[in-house]
Image (cartoon, rainbow over all chains, first blue to last red; front, side, top):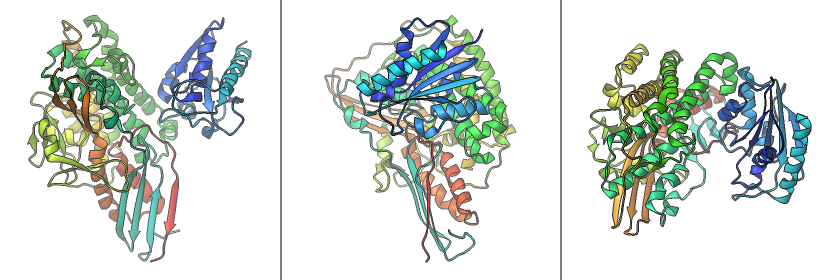
Length: 149
Length: 439
């Protein structure tokens, strides 16, 4: 049986950087079956552990690319590297993009890797998402459900 | 562009963001007519004011607050804080709790050293920009390194409640301690890890090492019965032998204008070297026979004075930590209680010094009769090594002037990474700016 893993990445104590985690949390409230859902700080090695043996992984992270806050971008990282600068809000030394590339180097990358970036507006200290990022979470949720259906 | 072959040049090499170190730092080198005029290791990460905002907090909060200083070595901060508070309260832990602390520390040494050996330092020796690039050609080695690191994290999760910023440590012991039978899986993993660490020693020993050595003052804890982690006297190879209580009488920190980290010096002596190289030089006799045999096979004597070979010493300490963890698990006796009571109801002070993966970490606190902290002092290993790193560069750069700017920069970054500097959460990109000013 194919295994699908969904990972919400970010730091919920830095405002909209928590958007990925929030999306994963909302996903656990849906009637989704046969999918393993994780939250992660984005540390590369723990990400690689989360998706070990998976056939498909969906990652959701906050992005800061200059697009209007709340915009959701979809990237297929199965074959090509992510544009790493899009995910520089990662909380640790090795980011989502580097985790993917390390796994690719080790031929340990799941066959399908989809990354959703939710454009944030505020990455200051403190919890809670801006209304724009909240909107992005809802949009990302719909995208993921479509992806999984 | 500067021409390294021309003696009438000024070469300025600026590395604005040091890659593969924990935190935000930069290096500036100035060379005029073949003479090194400037070496500045700049730590521009902003001050974090931990010592200030510990004031007014309860003494029991110090381990968890100070753990937040570092995501790589939080256990070290918890240990030094706990020991300081227990010193202030006048208590000492019973053996089973002391052993569990040591086990937790083994986990941190394994994960921190494995990260540095495989992800940060090894690519320097093999000419790769990153561990990701290295992994393409050395897949088995990198996979082994990642699994070794995970073994360290597993100990943290098992005993600390989670792998980063453990939540199970408290002044007086732990919130919860394991049952004897809980260790089965961990012991099995550690047996694999010890074998992997031995293979790691062999692998790093055959890396190409630049010819370099220096007369160092090594400073570490020393304990009569064990390789040092949590306890001992502070000693050096130049005659220092003091109780931790006397730390501030012998060492001082000074402000340096170009860096946000204080430079530590041994009063009357100058720069000194803490960390694996120091621990090994001063305590190698207390390593296990298996570690000593591995050191000998790797060509290391009882003291190693080439900091580029610190990668071997780290691998030896990973092997030691695996063996020590297995010993603790085998001999473990369940404590009567996960902690012992700690009360502070008078003004007092306490200090603690433990061996973080990167070297000695000193804490001192003054506590009021209400149990609130009135003064805190924290001296991390990287600020103690900072001056020594610069001294290495002052010697390495003149020996390396025949190299191109890119090669020289590579060599200098590699020399900095010999110390595994932990500035805090890391940057991972490198911006290079190079200027040439005709003399």
